[in-house]
Length: 416
Ligand SMILES: Nc1ncnc2c1ncn2[C@@H]1O[C@H](COP(=O)(O)OP(=O)(O)OP(=O)(O)O)[C@@H](O)[C@H]1O
Ligand SMILES: [Mg+2]
Image (cartoon, rainbow, N blue to C red; front, top):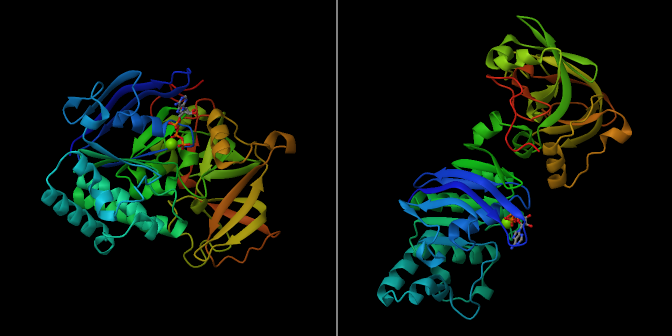
């Protein structure tokens, strides 16, 4: 086991495609780091550079104390697990798991011992004599994991290992990978484009966009304090609502106007984000998590608002669509505020497979609120939405950076 470090790592492919730019990551010994981002953002490229399967164009990679830029893949002592399990169909599970060890002329008794141990960890003991074709998808994925485990590598490198499994199995295997990694304590870099997988698995999560690292932090911190619009919109499901607003206020109080409606901000908002004062009289981007909104009819009545961070305001609209999820109800509505169109939101829309249409249909932004199942709101009904204004997020409209302390409107390096 070892720490893994990437320092200023970049990749330009032979055809001139720049896949990764100036990537800095320090992964601690035994840490589970998840690399997440939309398709094409450079996750696989980064992982393949770590594995030594792709040459690095710039920077330095170290595994343990050793700089491995020029170390061939087989000598890097890392084990890859891919999306395709790449099992040998004619070999038994036992021989598949032990294959790498036999290649390296490890004594038979030792191979047997290692394979038995891995099979035990993975719950494969009773399948060791079967052929891969007689296994389920989940079991095959476990065999692939087994091959990585027996090598006792310095690090596991996993590239979307669960993406070929159906949804239910994926959740089950996800829990299992987390358990195995914890038990073995092997430093792991795990690539996925699924933000739920990233949030549930990672000790820390690194979010990439177009080859550039946006933020790396523990899951809850990414969720609570996204560094910019891209991370804000990418992490969370349903996604954070983003809309254009303007801020006004004086020393004590501040008011936010979105789509012609006013929301009063509690003093705590300005206290926690001194830089917001620099935005008085200006437009900015407001982020509202779906769960920070509630049916106003329920708030206050029987404790519906007990979880609020000490602020509230309401938005009046009509429910376009109501989706009962059992544990909560997703209410879609819109406000007459201009859509936020930046490089970040375009990239998010591309990833979600939706398009930014706003401009053609007049200024309105669709929002999703997560109401309590006790709501009586039906599609088409007028709705008054209580907003927990103490939990709003604010971003600079030009740079997309979150507004906290320091200099207002400081821009990011990756802006184009
Ligand atoms: N061999 C290659 N030659 C040229 N360009 C490549 C090559 N491999 C990948 N790319 C490009 O590099 C960029 C990053 O690709 P990469 O496969 O690393 O993304 P990814 O984040 O793993 O995406 P996905 O989620 O779809 O797997 C993309 O623009 C891709 O088209
Ligand atoms: Mg990939």
